[in-house]
Image (cartoon, rainbow, N blue to C red):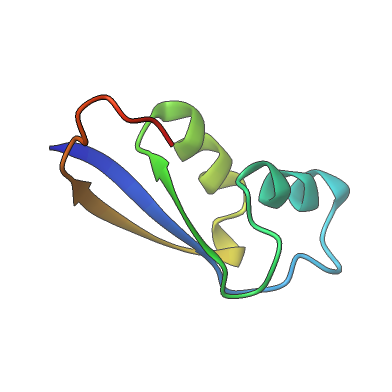
Length: 70
């Protein structure tokens, strides 16, 4: 089973720096309460760490789908 991160935007990035707004966009989040599932890799963890005050993050186990990619 592959580890994934379930990332939800719970607070608006309005009023925060341009870097933080861009990081939310790079994670694929556009709307409040939107959720995305990303691979649990150091690059994504670093992005999450930069805007952790805006996000809710959960670790989930996902069975490999036979080579299918997101």
